[in-house]
Length: 180
Ligand code: PRP
Image 1 (spheres, protein in one colour):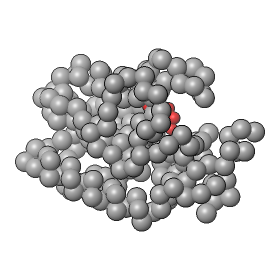
Image 2 (image 1 turned 45 degrees about the horizontal axis):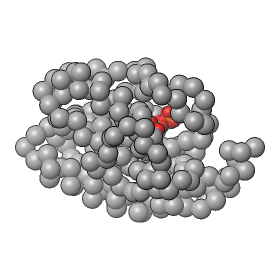
Image 3 (image 1 turned 90 degrees about the vertical axis):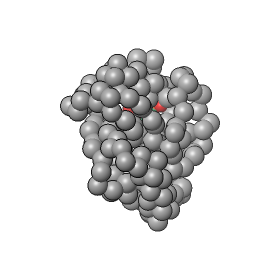
């Protein structure tokens, strides 16, 4: 385990099992259709790559970057799309892939943006749902792997100051790392 990590919340094996079963469920739900998976960078990149392989071959994918600006510790109300998708999603079923649903501000903005592009449907798929967070918008996960509490989680794509994304597990970051 990395020295900066206090404890492992979800092991590599637990993640693999959860993502594989979620992928199968999505494949079943979308049988006969070809959804477009849209990953929200950067945090979703590892989850997205494992998820699309679990779903199978009949999917397309694209990526967006959405940033909320202001104080880094308390996210501001403004979300800007700083990288848009290339795919034409008009009339298509879209599944937005996120690493963590926290205040839901990012996904609320992304949902509005994708609805403007005339997607036939937009579902939310998140690796982690921070169930203790006060939601600023009424956005719920349609698919998720795990619930988390009010802890600083890193690994499997999630960062603190751009570090720890490459950890194969999801762990709780030691408090002294982000409070010093
Ligand atoms: C994080 C995370 C989500 C968003 C969730 O992104 O990846 O996109 O915050 O927070 P919200 O529900 O309160 O909007 P971040 O801006 O840290 O960028 P990153 O994915 O590049 O790490």
